[in-house]
Image (cartoon, rainbow, N blue to C red; front, top):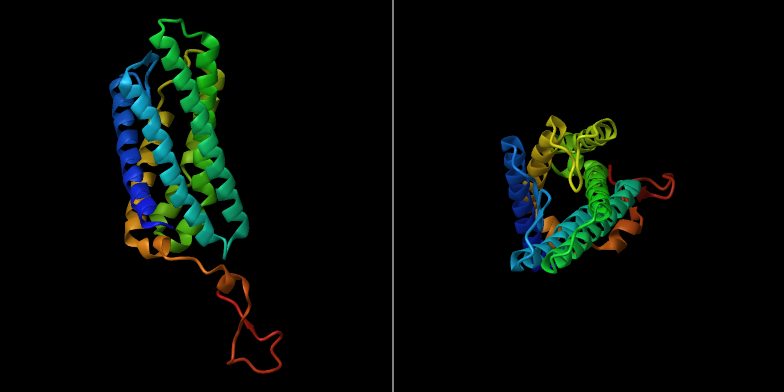
Amino acid sequence: MPKTLFYIGIVCCVFLAVSAGGVLTQEMQGSPVSFIAMHGRTLTPGSSAAWAIVVALLAAVAIAAILVRMAALLAARNLFGAFLALFSVSASIVALAWVVLLQLRMVALARHHAAIGADLGEMHFAAVMMLGYFVTLSFLALRPYFRIQASRFLSALVFFPLPLFLLIVVQELFDSASAAPFPATSPASIVFLAVVAMLFFSIAVHCVRHRHMFIEMTNLRELLEPRVDPGRGAKAVGRVAFDS
């Protein structure tokens, strides 16, 4: 993994954790939720919205690179988890791109003083929910990596986002007071944001502490070729040594 991309990913993880903490504070104070170029149902059609969209796309690539690197390190022990993590991270990038494109369309309509229809808001709501689902699935798929390489606290923390997200979905099914383009504020959403902020900050700390695993090259030949154990006798089947 290139050093520049690695350190940019760490900075983006810290920035995302701080942003999630800021949104958490806004929800606890009852203020409208901010997400990239939107503040509740209010748009910021100025240059700040365009910069927010560009930064979101670049930060997503940097963070996804770190998560994909974790999936590559996991592949030697848990191939299914590695493929599931790769699928989830890729789907998260697609979902975020869809959210950003919808917001870009909303910003363009706001600049021309055109009305933003309810259908566009509902599509944005569905895209945000899809993004949340795939992000939580990415955390859960990478749990075997965190269990091996990280602390027990981090490996246990990745369990919480998915049940909290399902609680938010259940709330949206039975609560008609929620209005697009964001889910309604609830204790589940507040705890969800707190857990996501802690996870991204913990990932940044983990990457700094184990930066040698992310920066050095992975020799796939050594992972795929069987290694002969000279200490075993000739009667050993295949005389192949596997890591425990």
